[in-house]
Length: 287
Image (cartoon, rainbow, N blue to C red; front, side):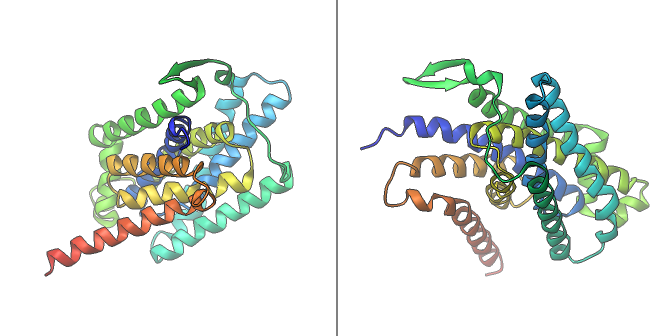
């Protein structure tokens, strides 16, 4: 029987990146009602920007800041230039628009950086400690800690800050919020920035933990979307639980020969299971 402990450790670190992206998706959905399929592509752009600066001899810390700033900037651009023109469109159309934006970013990254997979090496890869007989790099520990810390910070922000309360108001009614004096486009813009920052951090970490590939990082949005579905695009704690469960299950299935090749189906199974569960509860209420 294989030793699952190393896979559990690896899965928790990868799951933390799903959590970061999932939290960004939920925050944006609660503020603007948009399911952002471009979250993974925005993270990939951050990782490529960071990698380019390091390859040209730039300091690593500057490359991280530049990558996250690029992710926040491109997300803000979409939120101010494109999203407002679709604000009153069908929710499916708004979601498809973000998917189109993701494909545009994917094509741009393929043109500029090519398709060859790379690794974005972080200095924390050389630092490690042992837990339960398993060597854990500081990168994995930081990824896990950032996932939980970002969730707690966003929950406090939404509950206590004026801007967070305005985002929650938009989730209830954009028209009524505007009538009460909420600057809808400004609040929307901040939601896109927060989503972009979380996507950037997630993309940089995932490029180190797995590989730096535009296609792979773009489609990493699927587990994040599945985690958001578990949280019903509203509950951050449930989104965190979903992201962690998806990442851990994917990792634990890796050494199992029969189901290992099909571990990428785990996010879909979680999403479908969550939807069936929500449908069951709705049917019970109206029974």
